[in-house]
Length: 544
Image (cartoon, rainbow, N blue to C red):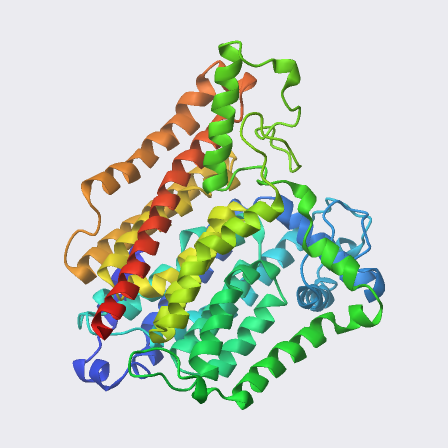
């Protein structure tokens, strides 16, 4: 990655007059194309030797087969494979459209009964489909760069905020390994999210609302950030004026704007869910979208509050057995560390239900949502609230996947190139969150590429943001914690596999990774919230 930056710096220079005249003329130059081509080249060459036949590879192959081979009425009933269709209908139509291209590569991949089917043509199609749909992400990043504030940027291209943002997004380590090695379509989905954010930053709120509504009907995990969108649009779009103290002026409410927003939501929802409502299948679709029988945590614990909760419960149960205060035979049989996706009971601490996680999630995001109602602070206040909502849902949500950390990291990149404080929080969250994705790539062949890519991305993040804000962004304690990730990696990849406990307690490396990363993610969440509330308090003080 670094050699691309050197190449860009040597062949492209930006006259100061172009920077001061506005960003649009800058983004038509060749540096952005070089960054994009570098990413595509990496995914098509280097990653080709590391492509893993992950669970998600089979999931999406099965969805291609379902939507291509079966009538619409059977899409959400088909259960030949355990990987049933559990995304909203708009994503099912997306798979349906891909399947018509897939049939020209290998028709056998579109047979529902061909479980775990792989062929060179199938792998090629799956890989190319991710790369091609990443065009949405590439365009969205370009639009986000147009919206970056430039006050702190140097006239040197490599030190300019929009260049740093482009590199942080296009070369994001987590997105690269999740989509192009593990296999998913996150680039396509995050592209729509970032484009929606960019439109709000540009003041094009109806377009932003439309894009988010489409996104919500493609993947329902984005419901977690819907409160940020709903409150922001209601407060800052439907109410057109504020009082002198910054509070809402109720008389400025615009019914026309509310109807426009409502029409967007209803029309997109009708397009997505309409056919299934007409067939009387809405309950069946919803049961697939919200399968609460999967348990509190994923097979690998995402680094959040519940990972720490599980760890405390596990430690207390082990201690209780050692001290002969607990009877092993009476402890719950379903183990949190068994690597299975299932419901389980905690041994000592109270078990957590879906309703409890929902309440905790709502409580965690409520102050952020209220802050953009009381003191909106424009589209950037909305963006900060969006990041808090994404991270709050990751911290307290039900059955959270480790990959969901990207929903906070990617939009937070925009704030990181504009604020010194945000840059420090971003480095903590990104480094910890990205390392927590390591267990997704668990084979020996994948170890070098994930370590190398993360080192390159992390080094670039630290050096570029340090140069942008002219100084260190982390305190000694934070730096020490991040260096501890090196010790964790050595323990998990080198020391523990040679120990006698490898066969009797194989879950320990995952547990250590999850718990250690949970501390960093929790810390980042607290720092982000403190920053948000401090800004809110400052706004109130100014009004006094």
